[in-house]
Each structure stands twice: as C-alpha cells, then as structure tokens.
Length: 257
Ligand SMILES: Nc1ncnc2c1ncn2[C@@H]1O[C@H](COP(=O)(O)OP(=O)(O)OP(=O)(O)O)[C@@H](O)[C@H]1O
Ligand SMILES: [Mg+2]
Image (tube, rainbow, N blue to C red; front, side, top):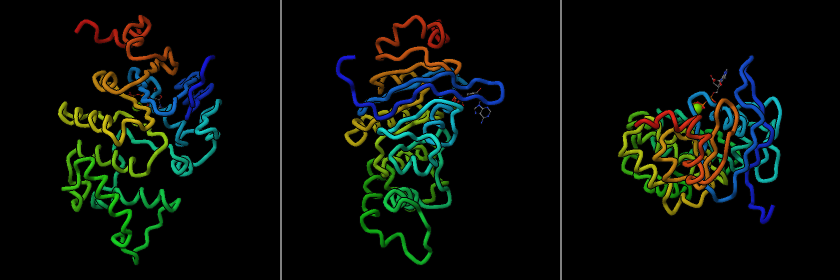
C-alpha cells in the first residue's frame, strides 16, 4: 500500500452466471490510468462476458464496476459509452451500407450531442469540424483513400481498423478491445500493433483481450489471466511468462511447440 496509482476502472467481486454456468466468479481487477492491460485466457474463460459487464450489455449478478469514480452498474450502454468507456467488439460493428467517412462521423456526432438523431434534412457535410476530424482519423488509420466507399465493401482487416477509428474519434478515457486482431493475417496484425503503439494511441488507457501472444507481449504493460471465470493472476509480461500457474493453466497448451 505505498503510492496508489489512479485506477480508472475498478471491478470488484463481480459474479455472472448463465443458468448453472459460472461465467465469472468473484472477479476483481483494477485498471490504472495510462496502462495497456491485456486479459488472456482460454476460449470460454469469460473474457467477453467481463467486458460486457463493464459496458452495460450484461448486468452482473453481484459486484461493482466503478469507472472514473462512478458506479456503472445499472447504467445503459450508451450512457457508459458517453462517460468515456468505449468498446471495440470481437465482431466489427460498423454500418456496412454507409461510407467509411459517415461511419466515423456518426460516433463523433453521437459523442458531441449525447445521442445521434439522424436528420435527413441536414447534410453531414455541413458538420465541418467533425468532417475534418473524420478525414484526419481515417488518414491515421490508413483508410482515407477509401473514405467514399461503402464500409461493407472493404476487407476484413480494414473493417477492424475502421471500427478502431470509430472508437478513437470518440476520445475515449478507456478503450476496451475484444480481440482486435482476430482473423487477421500477420501483416494486418502487425499494422494494428503499430497503430496501437502510435503517438495517438500509445498513452490511451486500454484493456485488450487477445489470444495472440505476439500482440499481448508487444503491447501490454500488465496482463491478467482469466481461467474458467477466475482471474488467477495479474502481473507484468515478464512475471506472467514465468508464472508456473499460467503455464499450467494456459500457456502450457502450446508449450511443446
Ligand atoms: N449470453 C449468454 N448466455 C449463455 N451463456 C453464455 C452467454 N455468453 C457467454 N456464455 C457462456 O459463458 C462462458 C464465457 O463466455 P465468453 O464469451 O465470455 O468467453 P471468452 O473468454 O470471451 O471466450 P472466447 O475467447 O472464445 O471469445 C462460455 O461458457 C459461454 O458459452
Ligand atoms: Mg470472447
């Protein structure tokens, strides 16, 4: 109990069951401001469930989720998002029938106005400041050349980058990424790692759920290991690499490689 870091997110005693299944059992986790915190664990460990409990898509059976000093339990997902906790989903949630530019402008407008009400009589092009920021954000993500294409028509890797751009333009206080490189070829994975390490994103507080250990060890300041709904340990990448509990429960699966 020496110097207390500023915890932007505190998950305390969270339990979540689905029927008889204990998806989360007494989960405690503190995310420090400015860190990149990876959550790893086998399929079905409860990682996405934990994020869903943070962003209001699921309500835990018990426990608390405190973000920026405020209890989030019972708040609606859009209010939690507006408070600054932004999640990038395991399957990209984009608007396939809109252009990339509009995909990025919509969350920016929703953030500014607290809600997005589509007004067919008002052109998005009249939103000059947001239009400029949308172009700049697409450029940061190497997507500006596609700005007038429909989002449904671009590659899977580009869609995932688009979703990242849609998150970043909201200036999140905490970004939650659920498997940001899932299904990507190595080349796209490396581009995503570089983006997450870029000037714009490196100091942003992030929680990253990831199966790809190359991504985890390239990005994480600290790592928590979730196994069957329990966080078995939290530590630096070095500590996690050398933790026999982790080897046994998780990393051990690929040890004989
Ligand atoms: N809505 C739901 N209803 C019933 N069971 C669910 C629901 N959501 C998740 N589960 C179950 O809860 C457990 C944890 O699922 P979760 O999706 O959180 O795992 P995960 O760690 O994200 O896995 P993966 O690495 O495969 O994405 C699994 O056994 C899953 O089948
Ligand atoms: Mg998941």
